[in-house]
Image (cartoon, rainbow, N blue to C red; front, side, top):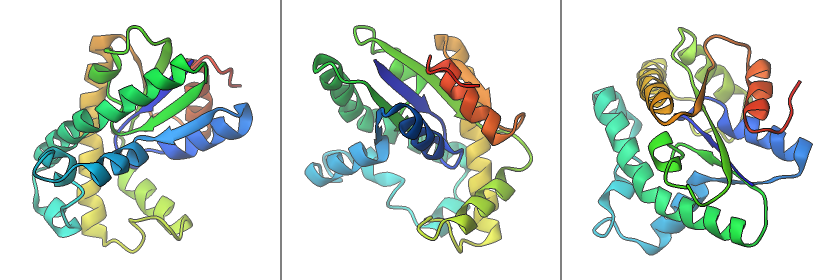
Length: 203
């Protein structure tokens, strides 16, 4: 079975995926990793959308309309999906279970995996505490790339998270996938809800 966990940046996908790996011994791969593989074999000239968002400084992201940033992430995700889909199909062909998590897991893209047995769920956070959550998560992790980022930059990124969450919620409904709103429930409850949605149990 191929399990897919999607959502905007900074909503806890990797943390939940890590808990699933710990409990169920399922291999986990991030779409960030698959995207990095593509970046190593493609040039900005060959795949400009793959490099556009990652090539922006935090200051540039802060000054850019969140709607434009969301569209940029969507375009990047469509490029990365070529690697995600190939990975999913190979893992299925080899008879291996795998969980793929990341921003590039979008409802419109997952809907193309018709021949591959899969279960998918999407996270989002449109609540009032997104900025606080991002800041506290970064403070707990010395390797977090948002550690030390200024409050105005975090606020701008929180707006991106809300905008992309709203888009994913709408798209998930359109394609018949479950969407879990993290602004409504404790994170521990969201972890269990993801596991239930993926058919992995959960309390």
